[in-house]
Length: 153
Image (cartoon, rainbow, N blue to C red; front, side):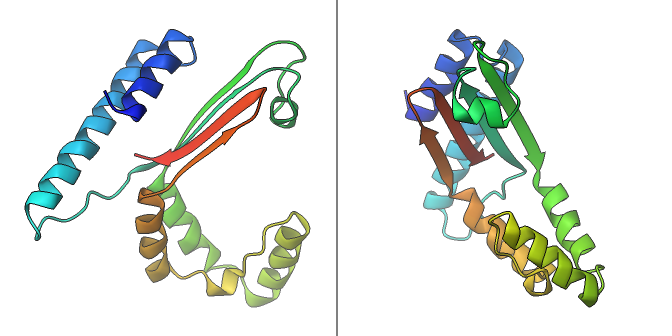
């Protein structure tokens, strides 16, 4: 059993996700494995593009992460976010509609929040390259009171 599948089953056992969500995750993992296997067998096979960016948070109520996302004191906080990549694509197209004068203000506001992004450099043609890079990404943040996982499926 691979680590991803085991992680899904552990989340199910802990009550973090329901049976339907576990089934969808395992199906996505299996499809990913089938795609990877067929891609390695055939050099002409295209890599499956991710459809969703997934963020899972499991945090104790007194952890800093739980408090930042609005968890109640003492109780566990669980977040399961599934963002369609199509939303990312639409967001980049919408960002290109922001007038240059407003982009300066938006960039400054983002920088104040710790995110250095230049909206004028965000182009729809660069987005596919970014999404391709995200498909290989998995971020795990493990703290004594919280666990955050981000991946694409």
